[in-house]
Image (cartoon, helix red, strand yellow):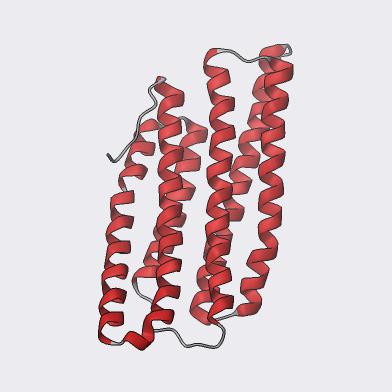
Length: 221
């Protein structure tokens, strides 16, 4: 087995990437659970999502500490340093996706016993798209696949279209039935949380492009 600084860095950074994938899986599950509790109006499940967010937060901090330790002990330069800094930025975006999933769970609790304003059609599609984008962009990061990263970022347009459809429909309902404003707003909050998750995915894709090319710029402008 090869020894020395290179082997040590590779081993320790591989552990960081494994933890980042584990964090992504936890957030992926949180998004799915938050949608389930919205569809079922399951406040007990919503409480569970909120409690489990603490583990997501802790793993984020653990990954950041591991990255700082890598910088301090291995003193990476050039591409290696960019990779560690990229991981530190990415972990923040992933953790914030978990916050948005928790926001949906908190909305379910605030809704109480009020029935859903309308059957959920586009919001579940948004959740599925968000989960697909999250899984794909983290795998692209591990594989350093910038073409896939760019393709994933382009899917943010699809998310925006779904969000606009939800927004327009709910505004139309509120205009026709002012008494539905509160229930419509709850669904708008949920849709907005999912739209923001896709924005964080795009941030990760941009970070990967920077890692590979040194060119930091916005995608989907």
